[in-house]
Structure formats: C-alpha cells, structure tokens
Length: 321
Image 1 (tube, helix red, strand yellow):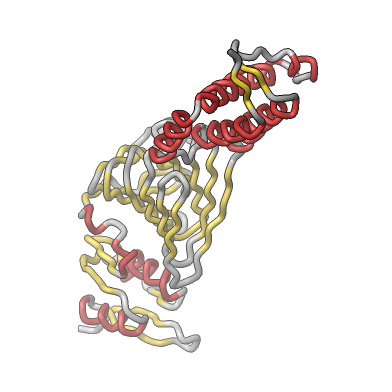
Image 2: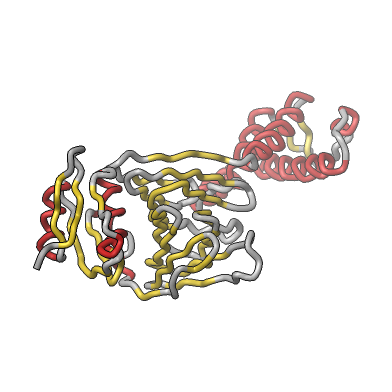
C-alpha cells in the first residue's frame, strides 16, 4: 500500500537533510534525526525521497541545465505517493536550494582595537582569541577552512574536521593545522608561530624549493616570506598564548619583540630606538598592568631606563651602570 507524503513531512525531511549534511552538524543532531525517523513510517520514506531527489537533481545539474520535463520524470521510490506537484517542488527546492546555499563560502572579518582581547567561537568548533590591534579574515568553504592574518596576533584552537583542513595565511606562508592549538604573531614582516598542542606544518607554495617545516607541541619558529629566520626552538607549551590572561613569557627573545607585544595593549607608546638594545635577548615572565607600571617592572628586571618624550610615549634606553 502506498504511503502518502504530505508537503509538511517533505519539508521536515528536507530541513533534516540540509542540516545533517551541513558543516556544523553535531552528534546531538544525529540523535534527534534518529528519533524523528523512528516516530512515523512516512518520516523515513520522506527522508529517503529527499535524499534520492538531491542525488538525481545534482547529477542533472552537473551534466546539463534542468528542464521542467526532466523534473516531471524524476523517478519515485515504489510505494510512495507524493501529495501534489507543490510537495514535489518543495522537496526539490529545499533539498537542492538549501544544500547549494550551505556550500557557498562563508566569509567574516574580525578586528580588535589596541588593548582589546576578543574571543571568537566559529561554527566548526574552532575558537580564535585575538590580541589587541589584530585584523584577520575567515573563509570557510565545503573543502577547506582558511584564515588570513593582516596584522597582530591570534591564538587558534582548531575544531576537529578531518574532511576540511584548517590553514592560516600569514606573512607569505601557510600554516596548516594537524589537530592542534597554536599562536601566530605578526611582528612587522616577520611571523612567529608557537605550538601549544598537536602539530602544524608551515609551507611556502609560492616559493619552490624552500620546503616545509613541521612543528610539534612545545616548538616555535620565526619566519619571513622568503626565509626561515632561525631554527625551530623549544618553548614551554603551557606558556603558549598566555597573553590571553595578561602574562607574557620570553626565553632569549629580543627586547623589541617584548615591546611589540606591549604595544598590542598600549598602542605605539613604547619605543626602543637603539638597535643594539632592541636586539638584546631577554628571558622573563611579565604580568601586564597599566603601561607605566609595566614599564617600571621592566626597569627592575632589565638593564633599561625609561624616558618620556614630548608626545607622551616612553622611550627605553640602556641603563647606566
């Protein structure tokens, strides 16, 4: 005996099909779908019909434009009666139209002001934490997840999606996630990558012959677009991204890097004009306060002295013995 499929049940089936085949489907959605399918025999029949309609219609779209005569001749599963042409049209529009819409690229831009720290959850389970004065773009497609950093610093905790790689583009190179949490910090033309969990692969597809570098947990690397600036170094994994809670940690890193990180919070209000002092390696852990208190802490920990200039900025100079 044929099972009558109403327009309402076809619409419900179409909604479930689009939701479960989308990029943001969850395990809870799977369980809810199972309950819906088990509720009535027509639910299962409607879902199968929508699935078949999508498969046939998309196959037709790939080969040639769909004509009305093609739609009328779409085969139905034996034992199913569809309640009118409107129901069939609704199923095709919902299954094809909604599905094609879900495959369109999703693009978003995120910006932070000086001193602002912003956490952005993405719909794939990824979380981005942007440091102050950071600008980046996110583009999600059906095949890949792309993040492009224009400037600043971001800590990335990547949601698991084996079917779609997660790539960060910064400073002329690509950082590809291999199931991880990592920090990317652009300092002018240089980029520093530190891995807190998992692994990343850094490559330069636009520059043949430079090879790829894989970093694991507790490793960091600094690069420019045309070269690796130093060999991978060891870092404390637990300290990667601690700027998110107001703590900066350095192990034999140049003073100018510390100053650049402070300026994420305080604007371009701290300067180190002496190139030799700027290159001085520092090892310390610093808790952020207001600018003057933080600079005062630097004066206690390092051989530097602060001098205010006419604009209200602070200039760090070498302290006299």
